Length: 511
Image (cartoon, rainbow, N blue to C red; front, top):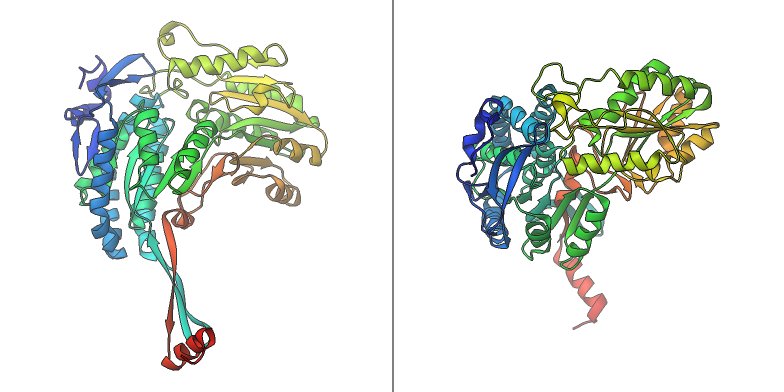
């Protein structure tokens, strides 16, 4: 490991846990064998946190072999035994909550108050949920559906799962992939984004310390082109789960098809935020700012397209801009910070490019620039409101993944719902109205995996998360996620020898 930056020990006391490497295979840390290194950079300062050896294909092979070896015993454990292990896991995570919060803030630039109050508690809650859900992996009850035969359905684990997680919510996305997989009896190899491996590695270490057997959870930290593609194409990996951009998701699907793998994709989003003319304007304005700026807008469910019915449009634009201008950018570890940096200068420049190009056809009401002064070395970008862009413009149709909200007017309810559906994506949406019938219509007709009413962004462990259209397929969280990580087997018993003879005679005659 590279020598950490000057501020790292105070911000991240757990840094010494990575002295042996950034690959976690069969219950221990080790160095990658690719011959290349990668730096984890604090996006708030541009300072290196540490440098590690990237995984190569040999490391992926070793991790898959460890997962394959661990599978029979873990799959053969009773639901109660897996549940007990996950309950212990949740307790260890709770004991180490501050370490996780600091690591997530450091590698992502998230305000510490967000990781303390949202990312880490949500992960602990998710672990507790799957600890309970592990005991309810039910098939179907027995029944005589065909004469003297009894049928039932077994729900069984698939085998080794190969998962790839993104950089925007490294801890939560690791948990969303690991927990339902292992609760169902699978073993897993997870590749986190190379920008943000720290909390995934801490998560795997905590699992081992909680008594989850070696090889059940393995982490390989390498590039997508080398480690990721090798993991997806590996013949001993039975399923691939990927969260990331739609473009990369298409590549993952192409590779997985060669070995006919089970596939779960959670891809991009461009969430509409539909405000009808009877909505509570103040609530909608606050919801739009919170929904657009969560995690500095680096959230595939973030509010990105606000459609506001014309009687409220100008007031909504003015009030949203004014509220955005009160948002405080700053050091993620400072108590008063509302908004941290983007993940990198590359991402900041990408976001700025969208806004700069939009100036030719739309109105940038507020923001649209990087701050200077004390924040100039970080990947910061001011909260930005863009109004009056054409529906078919780039800034309306493409995923920006930054603190940018685009506002457009609409006239009729039909038009508002049509515009909300007018992108290739369908991950999340929200509708704002005091009229229950109007809101209910929106929830039926907006094509998205989640539609909030008079709110935007909250998620809970008990309910599913996943998209429509080019936002992917399959569900994270909730018991519905077990449909992704298990396979069904029909078992049929012949209850009488006579029935068997009659069936045989029907096919072959009296032989």
